[in-house]
Image (cartoon, rainbow, N blue to C red; front, side, top):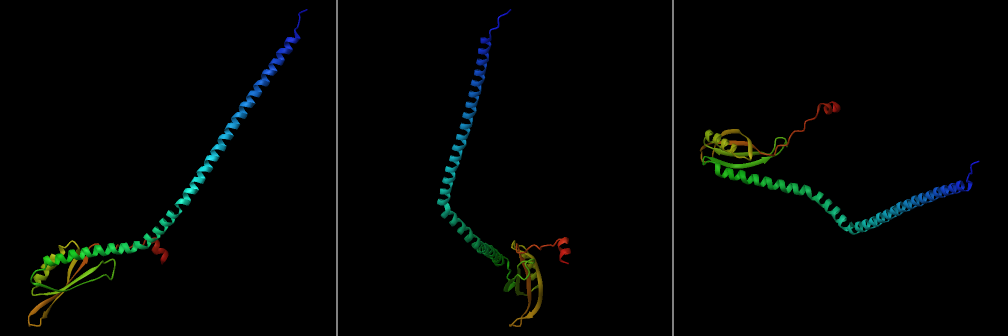
Length: 202
């Protein structure tokens, strides 16, 4: 009959169970350590985020006077913007008038006598209309003057409105005339309504 060593088998079983228990304990410790490190990392990150938040709050508090001043400046700029546009428009118009008067000084012939310059702007889509009134002894001189006015880069749509004969105080005959022109860049574009909008309004 063969001999069976039961003690050896029991020892092998005990050793195997001890090894499994040791592996289980080591695995548990490793998982616990990993969880602890992860939790610690989260805690550190939360603390760092909290410190950054406090620093940002302090920086915001320090910048509050500057932000308030910036808001006040923005409101002031918004209030001054229309005045600035008006001043810029006035400067542009002054420069145009300076060029127009300079053009008249150089291009008004000796036979033309201007006695008035008037401008009006009744319709924004037609622009600023400039009326030149004066007198001349010849219709040809008036026609030549119209062509000279057309050479001004600040005038467009130059046309003679009328020319009529008039007797001056010294019994001389003269032609009284009126020439109309439009200042360039003063016409506003017409706003066209779409068919759908017109249909809704009707």
